[in-house]
Amino acid sequence: MAPTKIASKKSSTKASNLFATAASKPRFTGNRIVTMNRGAKPSAIQRLSKNASLKMASIRDFGSDTSNYHQALSEADGLYFDTFKIAVFKKGKEEQVKFMTDASLGTNSQMVSEPERFVYAVPRLQANTKKKKASSIHDADDFTWGTQAIKLSNSKFTGKGINVAVLDTGLNLSHPDFSRFNTIQNKSFVRGQAVEDKNGHGTHCCGISVGAINKKTGQRYGVAMNANLFVGKVLSNAGSGYDSGIIAGLEWAIQNKCRVISMSLGSEVQPGETYSPAYERIAKTALRNNCLIVAAAGNESQRQFGLIKPVGHPANCPSILSVAAIDSDLKIAYFSCGGINPDGGQVDVAAPGVDIYSSWKGKKHLTISGTSMATPFVAGLAALYAEAYPKATASDIWMMLSQYAMRLNLLSSDVGTGLVQAR
Image (cartoon, rainbow, N blue to C red; front, side, top):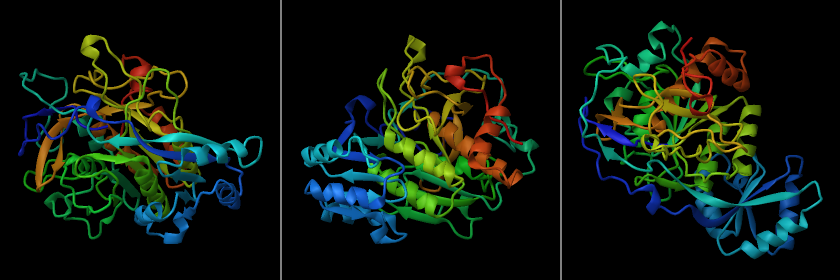
């Protein structure tokens, strides 16, 4: 999830008052997401939807251009994502969907229905008015504190040849720090908006994940410098989106054989709430396709007041690598969510997420905080591991990220196995 506070250090633009608070944002769109049994035949949902008087379209009708999913949902009652065996049905079709799912009970085509969620880049964004205290790890001229904390300078790997997808608010395509890329594959899944990032959040996350270097100062602030970047705009310039757009972006990334997908987005989860069956299906499908999904744990906690909120959606899925945020004293960030829900929702690893410097919209840079910033650190390291161990599967890379993490004197429910480290 995205930034929770802003710092003045090295900031070349202002970003206060850009976003509403999480409390003012709705959770559900009114659409329904239906997940079928993995062993169900593709024809089953067509038959069941027809019996329920529902007109179904398939994402395969659009070939590789999954960004046209808007058109399918406007012309049909629902859209079927063949790769995942998941369907999205429009608002107002609840009774038909219930009829269809009830009819599937006890069959190989059994279905589970859940509400479609809104997802957001930024739950809150606050100005940092307090004087910054001395910390254990400082920015240096050549490396930021975050890249030092993960021991990036010790690695000879750069993510060369590894496809990394960042699903977010897009990218400032003309930013000078990305000029080294001959090609940046990109696609917008937001109706009426180009990939160009007018928010800033996606550009910040891309900078961290793919190893950007400040063209003026030469300071390294990112990780996988030579990875192949795939930018999927699944959140609007206002920093919001919904599950169906993210699912379309995930299918696009898997079609393009991305080894890592970074998602600094999500929505708040309540205590005791379980994970999404649809995203768990997607994550398992990704792992079978040798693709690791990394997602932000969330920023809703207020640990300074003793309040720890559960890991957010979709990072709470067991098959998605969930990332917490730590500060430069290697302490858990006050906003970082914790693994407090019993059915899904654990924290897997931690990464730098407080006062993180990276690229920003308008060819600028900004220092901000959030589990959003921690997530692309882990995604970038996953690309380095994929280069270092070319025969490793996505599950192997997950295991190594956890195994080689530096242990911290903190609860595993807060930081998982510890602070991720470069190899």
